[in-house]
Length: 111
Image 1 (cartoon, one colour):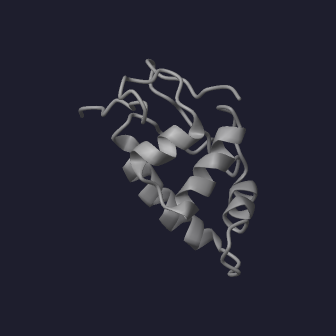
Image 2 (spheres, one colour):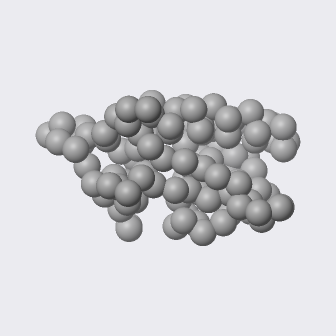
C-alpha cells in the first residue's frame, strides 16, 4: 500500500512532525473523527480507555449522548481515512482501550 505523505498546508513540503490540526486538515476529517483522534493523541502512544474516547465524542456541539456502537462506526471510518497516511489505531489488549501508532518516518508534534 502506498502511503500519502502529509504535507504542510503553507509550503507543501513533507512534514515529519505533524500537529493534530495538520493531520485533521490533510485527511479532511469530520468533527466527530477529529475529536476521536484528539483523544487518542492525548495518550501519546499509550492506551486510551474507550470511555475516555466516547467522552471526547460527547464534547461536540451536538447534544446526543454517544454509544459504544456510535464509537465503533466512527473508529472504523477514521481508521480507513488514516490508513492512507500510515497512521494506525490498534486495539490494546482486552478492554484496555486503543492507541495511536505512527509510521517510522513520522511522529506527532509534542505541543
